[in-house]
Length: 98
Image (cartoon, rainbow, N blue to C red; front, side, top):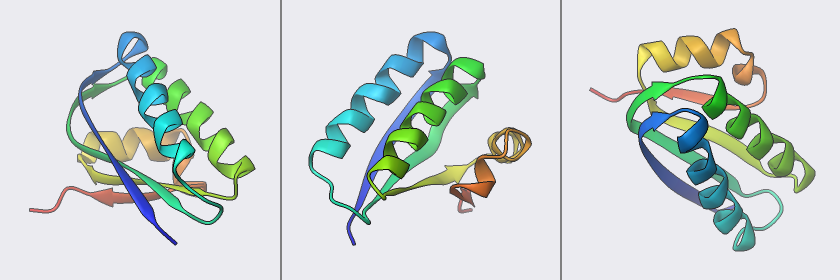
C-alpha cells in the first residue's frame, strides 16, 4: 500500500475546488487498488460547501478504485466541519500536529 500526499492551501471554496479535483485525478493516475490518498490541510484557511463537494467527488472515485482518503493536519474547525458532514465515517481525520 502506497500513500500519495496532496498539499492544499488557501480557501477551498467553489473556485479552489477545481484544484482539489485536478490534484486528485493526477494522484489517481499513479495509484493502485488499496492505496491511500491523503490531503494535507495544514495551509488551508477556509473550507465551504464547494470544497466539501470536491472532497465528496474524490471520495466516490476513491471508493470505486478500492482506495481510501485521509485528511492530515486539520485545524479544529475543519475537523468539526468534516465530522458534521460525516466524512469521518469514510475517511481518517488527523488534527494538526503541534
